[in-house]
Image 1 (tube, one colour):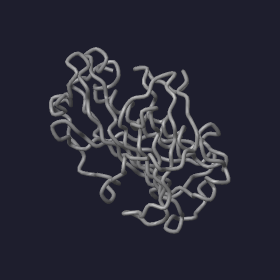
Image 2: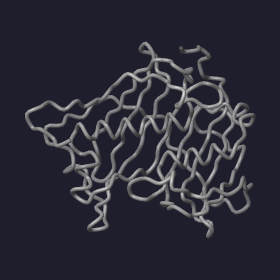
Image 3: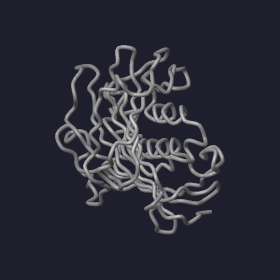
Length: 267
């Protein structure tokens, strides 16, 4: 969608969302992976409204690059629950910007998070300045979603437990033929059984994207358990999807335990 200077651009984008069966995990609630995917889709829709969506980026040889993302869950709505999903970008620095997300039910926050983005100029193989990307008339919202400092994850997993291998398939890759951001989340969570996930009771998940994986790549998932949490408390697990040379494609931290989460059932 081309940007029209004569039309106001919403600095926040919101829409109603129904938690359909395809968005749920084994528990009948909105899935962790599906929440990440929902927020990514929401970001794409808003970028298109602003005029910096996929058609614009392709035409100018630009590519949105996800640096890291973090989501905190306050509740997990049940199947067919009705939500309002919102997203908005934060005023950028020269080369980075945050995009915030919020999922609400009757004004109560169910999940929230943010993603740090950069833009790669594919022709010149360099990062693009973001101050020049947004339309001049765009007014950034003062609202923000920020938690305690982003987790620092030691990238060395040599002595950590291996949970098995993940082969990147055609269903994992996106338009750029890289492994889709949400597919990394699905790959990590997919190495745990339903009983393990039930015991983990995921409260928060943070992901740092280090290098792109492609179709046919074989990654090894390793786990470092029992790491102290700097944020909301609870037991933490650090994981990494590693290339054969031991370098990470992604690093992730999972905060477990529902002690501070609401137990209300949303339908």
